[in-house]
Length: 141
Image 1 (cartoon, rainbow, N blue to C red):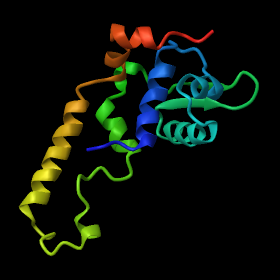
Image 2: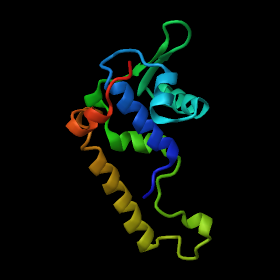
Image 3: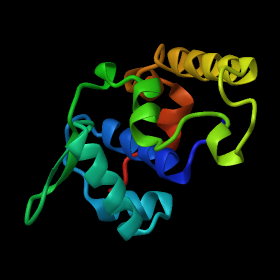
């Protein structure tokens, strides 16, 4: 399974904001750190705020911070929320004559669920606790 760029950036935003321990971050900081377009980032942040992963406020003193504690953000849950379609193969788009009750599709769906379940064993807090990641996510002053 390959994640979309939208979901990849969503994970990056969470890691950036999560390392700040409640400090309000700006979209400009995040965009500069990762080299992401502000317009693309705006869509990501809006969706994540709507889903409760982030809190955002506009205007002077506004910005972004986590909407939940890092230990309450499961990575698999986030992937499912951010990906439009998490199926490994789209049998309907392929117009496959075997689509109904196909054992291959069932096996791939089971594997996809196992992938998400495995990622749900990891929280944002787990990612932020990694020393290597911490050294790369140094605070921008």
